[in-house]
Amino acid sequence: MRMSKVAMIMSLVLILASEGQIKVVLDRNRDASATSAFKFKNVPSPAKDDIAANAKLTLLDGELDPNGADMGALIDGVCQR
Image 1 (cartoon, helix red, strand yellow):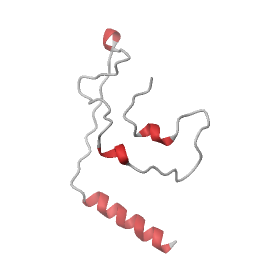
Image 2 (spheres, one colour):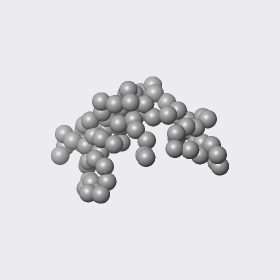
Image 3 (cartoon, one colour):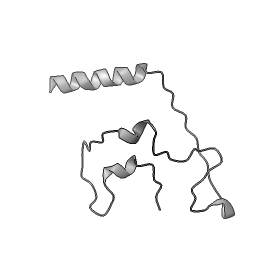
Image 4 (cartoon, rainbow, N blue to C red):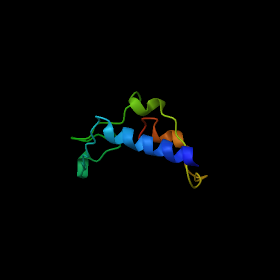
């Protein structure tokens, strides 16, 4: 238990010390521009080859919904259809 707390604290320190910046961008398509192409003026489209493409996902608590997709859908670069 103590080791996992140390690992979590170290992870938090590394995250806070990293030089990456978070940028929150909101955009909305209205009327004719709201198509299934899922393109926005200020928000980039999902990418299949970004840094998260090879991420390892772990469900820490709860359970997956049997009616939903697996966790790989979070990082596959494909939009909801």
